[in-house]
Length: 246
Image (spheres, rainbow, N blue to C red):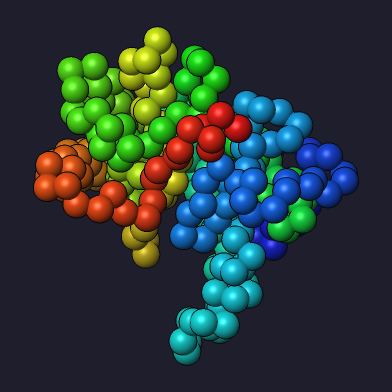
């Protein structure tokens, strides 16, 4: 397994030995604040997250002030952090967690450095699923979304899933027959506390997860208000048709 420069106990499959060529940055179907996401050229039902060349761990550390810039390089690596979080989710919650988050299949060497390989969530027509933010912008909080949204919130709370704030651009709405069926969280996982005691206490985890779900309701209301005011959509969370069909 290519070294990520961080330690993780997550059991993942061995990637191919050769470096995987993902294409130029425009080939990525999604561009976040720190990473690019490509369709895995070996399997159209998987994706690979890599660091943006302009947001590499080395660049991020060089921009940090003292004493933060004394931290190890791995602490500036989003892939390292996500791998660690997935390991803790795997230990504390187990297989049920993957009803709500895509599975991690390991690391792979790419021309952008080590990447994380995940399930790629597609609708039943083969297009990449849109974010909850985009769904709300295009369709609003319609009746079809109500049941999957409620089911997601109940399950997230019951499992005590660890996350920072649940943001609408970090949640995907997977559709079948043009109607929403399931919601998935693709980023922002892990308890952000200095001492994340909720990993060891299911009761505490459930209380914290319930607050995250309540915060999501507020985020949805805020997104709908912006839509109603014809405000700008914002930087994150939009896939055009060309991106969805990759």
